[in-house]
Length: 297
Picture 1 (cartoon, rainbow, N blue to C red):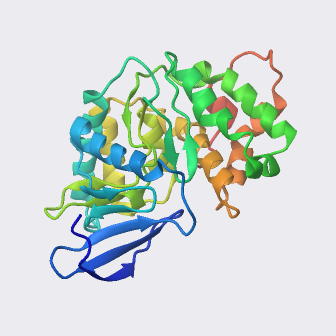
Picture 2 (picture 1 turned 30 degrees about the vertical axis):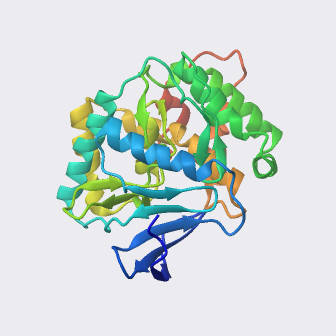
Picture 3 (picture 1 turned 180 degrees about the vertical axis):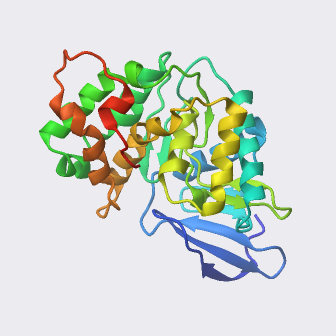
């Protein structure tokens, strides 16, 4: 594979689950190398490589080229840090809006399960978006050991009640190709300054899954331009920000499931679920703003 000329590997920062570095070579450009301290699942890096290729080929979004993907290691071409410019995020808003409109699908899911961090992302095909989000993105995490420890029985019951109310709380949306782990650290740049993505967990689901992760995770001030432009390009209604904490539940639950330190995810989950601890199963539907009020992500 042309990797025998590596002379050094410098650690790279930014990831949460994997070990990563940049390999210097005698006879070629540097390469990005990703691995784990212990043996990962056999298909983890192959699934990530597939996601990178699919985003580039179907979604026309730049991703690093896959040099090697096996059980032990993922080797990619090197991208650049994104520039701290509003214009960059505006370009990204156009790219993500095109992804949404160009990759709509009549079903929710993916041909196989893949990985969100080191947690298996379940992708069985489903015709109904609410059912898919309920079973594959929310309730899927409840059996995990750390989630059981973090949430009590009242929280788990509240999550089930919330899932039963999703059609009242979220407007119907088609499925489209999504990155699946779209926080700012996974947005980089090509040599010519175009937005590029890494670390995908792709599936066909609601576009707002990606939007919620960007909105609710730390992002730089210049990214405000992204949200304004994306909302205009995709015709988002005025209440879209209020939906973001609810949709981000799937990411909070995944973080709790995978890490001993959850960066406040359990606290966020309990805050979002609090109204549903009080509501009975047969209570009438409520508007999202009446249930939550100004809950932050």
